[in-house]
Each structure stands twice: as structure tokens, then as C-alpha cells.
Image 1 (spheres, helix red, strand yellow):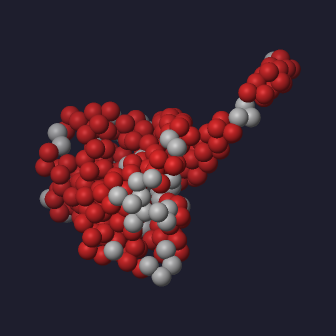
Image 2: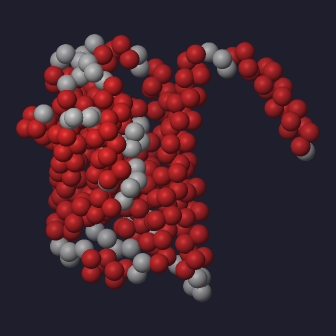
Image 3: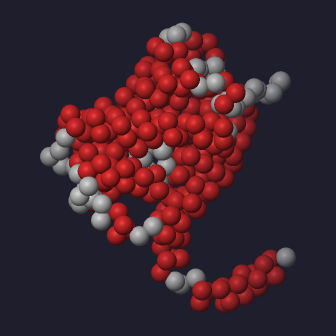
Length: 308
């Protein structure tokens, strides 16, 4: 079996290699691999934390920690994002684990949005990328917290239960906590990993197809530059620990447009959309993603106008 497999690989390499050296294809493969390699460690961290919440944290813990009223629980969960040094790939499985343990969906969604954007690692990276510009760090922190709270409150007010699929995680009878932990982690990683690949493929394709010259040509139009960088953040799907360095390199754009890039990216990007749709259902994603994107852009413009 091994010998035919090696022969097949060698034959494929001989026949296909002349067609796999095109610059666009090499760029595409580099971006795809970079997205997956960058995201997988954080995805593993997220599913491990989610599985630990499922297996080791009793549901009564959350009723003691979070306020009983959903509207009060949202800002508390929002601020809790400060203590999780992860990116958006980790936030989806963690939010899923919180919902499975009885946390109000609006609060879990606020945590999902806030944790990739306001944790210490991201804020330090932003300060390094924008030396001598502390207001950019303050603006990102404030705008991200505000967006997460507003989206959580709006979802609590308007979201219908049937539009959000809450994963069910119940330990099997007689199964130990460690066995439950490993089972939940394996299930979540395989499930979320597939959608991560789909998001990475989409992001890599759009990165190659959309010419950068189109983006740079609109840098002088204030309102359009904000929208362009917000959409670019969705397309590029850069991890929140690294996106500040990309934003700082976009010198043709205004500080407010860069702020929109930094606020939208950790909350709405292609791999995150795929993860959300796979975890919470497409009915949820088609409503939650436009809501988050719209609020993130509007809040970025407002905060940018005030601070920058």
C-alpha cells in the first residue's frame, strides 16, 4: 500500500509541478497556510478551554459569577475578555462552551466579540505597532468594548431563540471528567477545524483576486476609506495579535480608517464567519455578522472622530 502511494505522489508531483509555480498560486498557498498555521494554536487553546469549562466547571458557578439579569451580564462578560490572551479562533469554542453551561447567549456573544480585541496581548501589540500613538490603543480598547456590549444588548433585545443553535454538551453516564474533557475537545477541534479551513480557503482566494491598487486608490476619500478597510479586515482574516502591524503599514489611510480595520477584524472575518456558522448555525450567522459589522463600523467612526 505504501509503495503505490509514494508512486502516486511522485507522479502527481511530476505532472502538476509545472502548473503549481504560478506567482498567484504560490501567493494563494502561502496565505492559506499562514492563516491556518497562525490560527490553529489559538483554536486548540480555545477548544481546550471550552472542553475544560464543560467538564470541570459546574453550571452553578456561572450563576454565582454573572448577574442574573441578561442586560447586566453582558458588560460583565465583555470585561471578562480582558483575561483571555487569545484570538478570534479561540473565542468561538469558548463562547459555545459558556452557552452550553447555561450562560445567557447575549453575554457569551459579548465575550466572543471582546476577548480577541481587548486582551493584554493585543493591546501591547497595538502599542508596539503604533509607537507614540497611545490614543490608537485607547481607541481600539474603547471601541471594541462598546461594540461588544451594544451587539450583546441588541441580540438580547431582538434575537429569537430559534436563530441561535446552542451546542448541547452532557457528560455520558459513568464517564469521568477527564474522559468528558478529551471527548469534548476532540469533537470541537474536528468540527471547528473544518470550518477554519473553509474560511482560510475563502480568505486566500479573495486576497489573490482583489487587486491592492483598488484599495489604495480610495485612501483619500474619508467615508469610503473606512468602509474599504473594514471590508479588507474581513477579507484578510488576520489574527488579532498581528493585525495592528498590517494596519500601521497602510499609510495611505486615515487613523479612523485604521481604527475600523482594528475593530472589525477580530469580530468579523471570513474564518470567523465560517466558525460561527458551523458552531451556532447559518441562521445565526446571516443575522449576527451584518449586525456586528455595522455596529463596529459606526462605533469606530464615532470613537475615531472623538479621539483621533
